Length: 198
Image 1 (cartoon, rainbow, N blue to C red):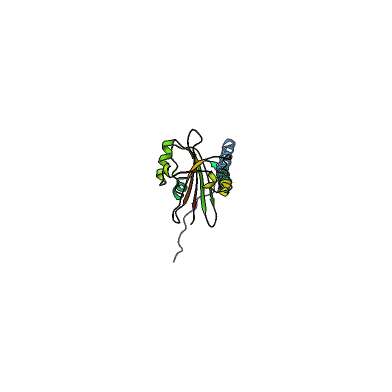
Image 2: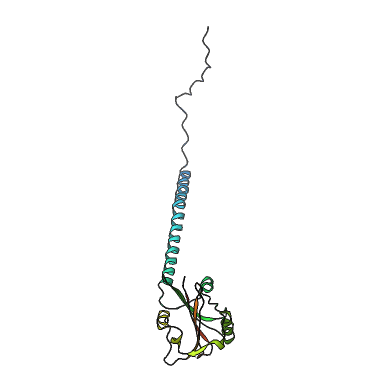
């Protein structure tokens, strides 16, 4: 038996070895390095920038929450729709100089609100909470809103101030609302302390 024949190999080029690859153009090398540097910068810089922006937003959000939690007096702002619903304080849409403060502990939660309204909007507000002007009783603010609650809210009235007020009690867990209306200005100023016991 004769051994199989191997195919004939081509002879190597003169000089031996593989042919040299042509040198890369210097401009192309510089351009490739710049593109690589830009890609790396984007891959590192964009996420880092996003993290910085996110951290700043988180810090500002924390400050806002701390300001709300740490508030010691009524501050100028509208309570949220959820707060107004829970504490049953339907502030008229046209009210102005609105302020509020919410306090919570293990036993009670309170929403202190104040706002100014027109006479017509006052009547609408009183009807919404289930009362009327006829139910308001003249007296000192302290007859309805306790000195403690007034101090927490930061409310003060000059000595001898006469207001009209009513307390609307409801069975738990619905809130009890102390409503004081000051008619001494050109428009009625309303003060409400709504107390909910979970």
